[in-house]
Picture 1 (cartoon, one colour):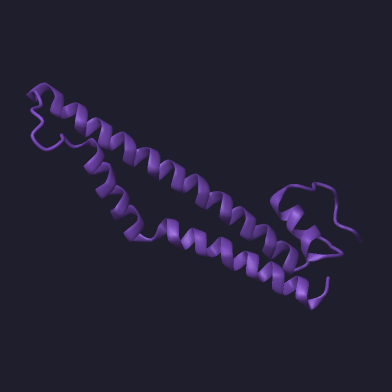
Picture 2: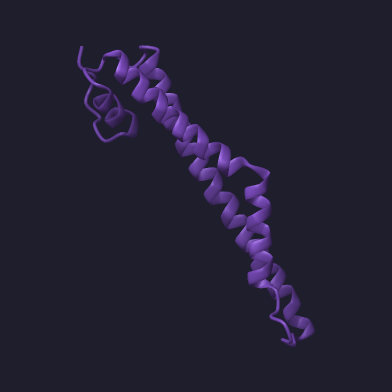
Length: 116
């Protein structure tokens, strides 16, 4: 791979790291919790039976748990991609002719062995 291929892979790594950083940002979770609270809360002027208030709390909790699960799944996926890019950049994954061939391997689109 040429120097431009290494730069390309480093920029891909930076993009994936940026996505992880956004998912793990406390502001992201706070904003989602505000959204979930607004969606699950009784609407203005809506009368809710006392027995239904726990249903609203359950819906809020379910939304937060789904958000956390999806966030964790995506962060793990992006971290896996970063780890594979690091393997390529440090030579642990073999040799690739181009950066795009390496990126296909990183993403799992081309499970063939690297060119040697």
